Image (cartoon, rainbow, N blue to C red; front, side):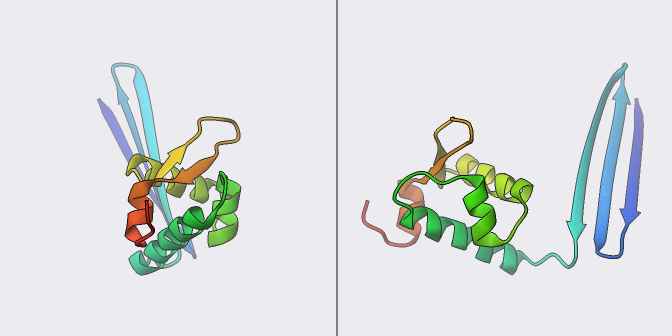
Length: 113
């Protein structure tokens, strides 16, 4: 097995790339952090998404999440998918993906379900 770890330092942050080659099968993963990471700011964005999701009359998309949070479309997609995995949003499975708030999300804000 061959393992290669590469750390790239930028002015605005860092990127970590891990490359694994085992038995001819190659896998790689990459993570990046731009600027100073703040768990509080990230939590604020998630709360903002959930608040807007609850207030949405119909479905909303990752483009809406990007608008609400000021994040890129890719980052908005990651947050949306994580909220689906944790049971706060439900996806309609259509393309483009649409989302709705679940009862679990509504209970966070004491919204009647």
